[in-house]
Image: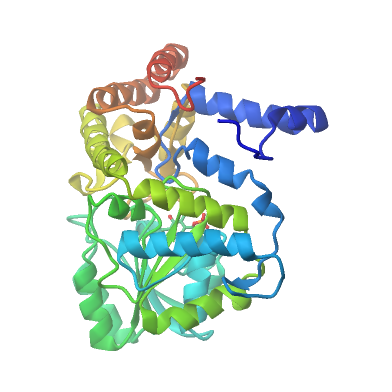
Length: 419
Ligand code: PLP
């Protein structure tokens, strides 16, 4: 189809800025040539990328559809309205805001909507799987609020719900955050709701990691339980980099005001439009099949890595990611990450619960299945990937041979096929 689209014209980038064109092509080669096992990444579709690379990037649209501070917003209003309607429909939410620039911005808006500086916020310990924005001292959330951290039980490595309740009763938080960046199991949202109700706290679920699995209807939704659900749009959900918020109608005004004008200026309308595209894709039965396979692949990957001698934290996974203790292989997480990188397998070192190593070293690795599943890989490939990860870590001198085997896998299941 010959569409009158004025959009990504790669030749113009090559002629205007060959250095940056080189970076873009080099990154595409990297994606195509290696295995991407970073749990928080995915490969956005050409339709999402087309919206992102469109002239919507030019438009200033401070405000919300129908209530903007700039003229000429008729078209972008439509994109945002469509996106909001899709988010509400897909997740059964009373209200949606697609303007947060990122997951961190979405969380900042949640703090802004409900907390004053100095308020107590109960959230998961960063060292046990929580996110930087959940009260780390190096983040605004830890500097301007009073964080209290819950964690996992040492024996099961599952969230310690008794501790959550005890800490809530002791500290009476204004807000409780459920959600994590390195927790492979399902979260009991009903348990968090009960604690929040008992102490009169707002319950925010940071669903950044797993919202795509909720969209694909393979894990339970936090929406019926939470006052607010924040999430990123670029992980399993497979949209553009960005954030979003769902909430109950009673919080709609507070959340919208917290995003704009309190913490952000003009929304990135190309990104809002790309989020709408991703939400449309995520509502398909095809995406449900994808999400189902993501979970099956993560489980297969965890089993395979266990067979390679690593210890699976919490004994398994219910989601798109697994956390592995690599100490049985006599390496640190940082060393395992480096050795896999040498073999073109990209994953990240990660602290494991009660880790004796500092975070920059870590005793574990985190692996995720979203990208390789987008490439069409299934359980047999996961078994092969696990063998390759094990070999890359145990035999660093064999990095070249492992990389060659990775090349055969990615040739059969390319990221961004050439035709
Ligand atoms: N919340 C959680 C649980 C995350 O895992 C992340 C990022 O990985 C974020 C928030 C922040 O998202 P962003 O990097 O888009 O700011």
